[in-house]
Amino acid sequence: MIKTYVALGANLGEPLLAFQYALEKVNAHIHCAVEAVSNVYRSKAFEAEGPDYLNAVALVMTDLSAPELLVLLQDIEIRAGRVRAYHHQPRTLDLDLLFYGQGRIESANLKIPHPRWRERAFVLRPLQDIAEHWVSPEDLQAVKAQPIEKLGPLQWHASP
Image (cartoon, rainbow, N blue to C red; front, top):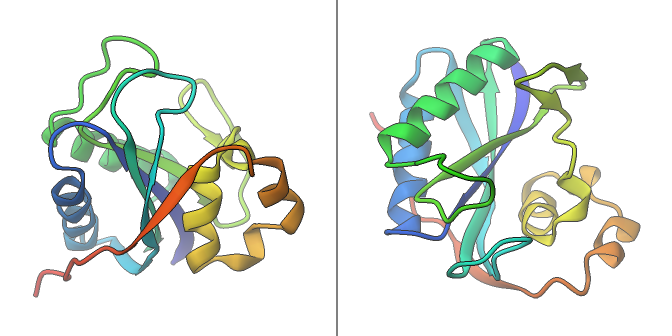
């Protein structure tokens, strides 16, 4: 099994319900297991307009390939009402594959590690909750001007 990290974000509809839905769907997949989930954070829309976002990060163990996991995540986004009409639009659910083990991937559809993960407080702060080794003090210092509020743990339960 490969250790992956998935960022969850949403600023339309019911973000917490969307996160619960996404985690349940990922965890229910025969080749995936959600091992840990960060606290939920609220932040202003970054490089975009719209309502505040809620964000979290999940540790997912999988034996899917990175492209297969991406397809699964995008399918879950679509089922949660995600529309991709334009760049940085508000969304009901956004699932970004941040890391796939120690792998590096550069393709038209997938870049691992996620190319801008170090530039965003809404990724770094939740990632720090469950994978402190990925986040340096310098990373946090670089995003300190981005307002972010810790809301607390995400309540979700794996399906039996």
